Structures are given as structure tokens and as C-alpha cells.
Image 1 (cartoon, rainbow, N blue to C red):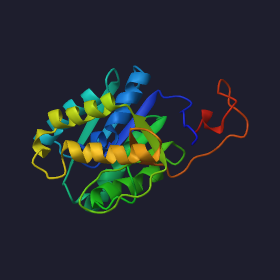
Image 2: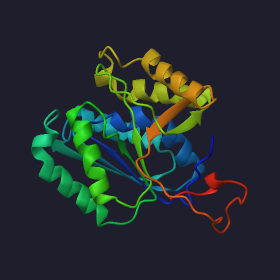
Image 3: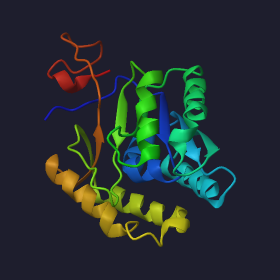
Length: 229
């Protein structure tokens, strides 16, 4: 199994349809990346929840999941469950972010996600970010929409435990949901860990990547996985 190491990580863009999507799908990855790249610029766009308790939860949660990062959080007021009907506003928000710089990494929902809000946002991402490394996270839910991922980030047990603790701490409004519990998050992480020879992992879907024939400057010449774009 080859390793993907981004050539650089100065700026990350995080995209979610709802408050809690990003930490559920990529919370462990955010903890690992923000600690590995201190001072990284992180911009998060969430399409729903503005002006509500959910926005307060999201801002506190993302600050906790992005330790040491220069964090900007934008929460919009699109109606939950109706994002496809507000396609133009969502697309304009994404296009506005696109004019503000080049992220080294984009993390958002996967295009096969069965939730209409997640899927709509996922389908917009490649229309604005065509030449970027994009990771599509997965969210376990009632719909059987999990697909075989293409990229894994192994997590040590303390990182997974920290992720689960932060989810419970910051998203009190979700604790009564039947799927929002330790067993759900730990169970999926264990399955993905088995699939990449680790104890636990978060998994992502990568729509497109390129491979360099010659090693890039400063990269490890021993393997194709030393650099990717």
C-alpha cells in the first residue's frame, strides 16, 4: 500500500452541509494534520445552521479539532434538508471562496452520499476546485450508502478517543440521535483500520490524482507515494 504525502500543507478548505459533518467525517484527520502542520490556515464553510445553537457548537468544535491553526469558520443559513433548492446560493459561496486563494487540500462530503444536502455540496466541489487534492469523507447513517474508500488515514487509539470525546463534548444537541454514540464512531474506525493494516482509521474517497514519473525536489526517491497532487 502506497503512502500519500502532500507536497505542502499551508492552507486547508473544509466543507460541510451541516454543523458536525466535518468533525464526524474527518475529525481525527484534522487533529493529526493541524498538529503536524502548526499554523496552517484553515477555512471551513458550512451551509446550514447560522444563528442557531448548531452554529455555536460548530465554531467551538472546529476550534477544538484544529489546534494551533489559523481558523476561519463561515456558517450559512440555508435550510437543513433543502440545500438542492438553494443551489445557486451554495454555489456562489463556494465560488467566492475560490477567488480567495488556492488551498493545498480540500476536505468535503463524498458524491455518493445518500443525504441530498451532502451530495449536492459534493457535486459542486469539482466545479470550483478542479486541480486540487480533494478528500471526500464518509458519515455512517441509516441509509446504506457506504462505499469502498480509496484513501485511509490510520489513527492511534488516543486520537480516536480524543475525536469521540470532542464530538460528545461539543455537539450536545445531537446526543439523542440513535447513531451518535461511541460505538458508531469507533466501529467504523475499526473497520477502516482493518482495511489498511491499522487498528483504527478514517477513510476518504479521492476522485482524481496524478503521479509524477520522476521524484520531485526534496521527495523520497524510493517510492511513488512520496509526493502527490
